[in-house]
Amino acid sequence: MSGETYAQQHHHYHRLRVARVVEETADARSFVIEIPDDKKELFAYLAGQYLTFRVPFEGRELVRCYSLASSPVCDDEHKVTVKRIADGRISNWMNDRLTAGSEVDVLPPAGRFVLREGETELPMLLFAGGSGITPVISLIKTALATTGRRVKLVYANRDEASIIFRDELEALRQANPERLEIVHSLDDRDGFLDSERAARFAAETREAEFYLCGPGAFMEVVERGLEAADVPRPRVFKEVFVSPEEDEPDEEDLARAAAADAGSTGCQTLVVTLEGKTVEIAYEPGKTVLESARGAGLEPPFSCEDGYCSCCMAKLVEGQVEMRKNDCLTDRDLGDDWRLTCQSVPQSRVVKVDWDAS
Ligand SMILES: Cc1cc2nc3c(=O)[nH]c(=O)nc-3n(C[C@H](O)[C@H](O)[C@H](O)COP(=O)(O)OP(=O)(O)OC[C@H]3O[C@@H](n4cnc5c(N)ncnc54)[C@H](O)[C@@H]3O)c2cc1C
Ligand code: FES
Image (tube, rainbow, N blue to C red):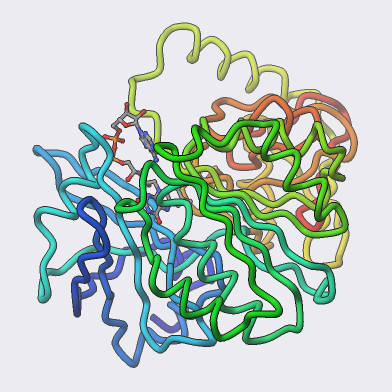
């Protein structure tokens, strides 16, 4: 592996063994992935990050992300937890087919849904919907172990039997009675968690950092609630659980991408801020912001390069870009000037983006 760049190492799939399978609920299983000693450094992770799996499926290879539910400081294993989605291809394949000893192709950890550095005193309010608990429990365990922060979890599920990690969360609560509060919201008991209730939770804990994770519909509801409670957007962090869009691009998509590329000829200056440094880099028309930054030897974060994992997002500080594709940023994110750099093609003479912004 020596001699390879960061990007090359992080974009090779590695064949890894499933060490153990844990039945969590009737429709969710955890898979403990064995990391050989020579890959330990490459697979080191931050709480909240995910692994990307490449799975052979009906003659094709499909790619899916699964968050690490283990904590890098509390656990000595890499564990992902996969919940079955009705008619979902890979979530069912993993639950049905993976057993101890199976081998899977996995990319090293990625993702930006992590604890912020330097904000260690603010309380945390976390909203998890169903399988969205996976990165959230990792964040909770890690924050409890490494900081003195107070933590409140609002965890929405269909019913009692669907609660993933119920016992582990209860044990954490008992071990940290002063610092960890857990509110279970069960659809069959409390009705669906709606924006009004989300807003009430947020209003009780406004001076906090907010972490949201779950499927798209859940996230929409919670985000509307936080907005109604006037929570400052820079203190909201989120991970949306989506699958990549697989449809072949239609004429409209192709025309949009071609127009974006054509519009990039006028860009003369691309300025990027990454890890505290701001640099001007050469821009070649037709390239994305991410490609240009990597071409200049920088190492910005990215994973899927397909517009759905959000790992590569950065704030557009000046100018205009056109995204070829976007399967994960909401209108609200776009309004806050977030862009997927793997899909963004510059459209104005000067474009400035900031990967460090929050
Ligand atoms: C960064 C990231 C981390 C993730 N971490 C986890 C995790 O830890 N655990 C986990 O179980 N999943 C996680 N997911 C979601 C996961 O990657 C897949 O999207 C999910 O397992 C469905 O894949 P599938 O192939 O089974 O369904 P597909 O065959 O892709 O989809 C089948 C149908 O289900 C719908 N659908 C797709 N995803 C969801 C969803 N999440 N909820 C409801 N409906 C959906 C689709 O619109 C489609 O109609 C994560 C996603 C991302 C982007
Ligand atoms: S790298 Fe996944 S959206 Fe850009």
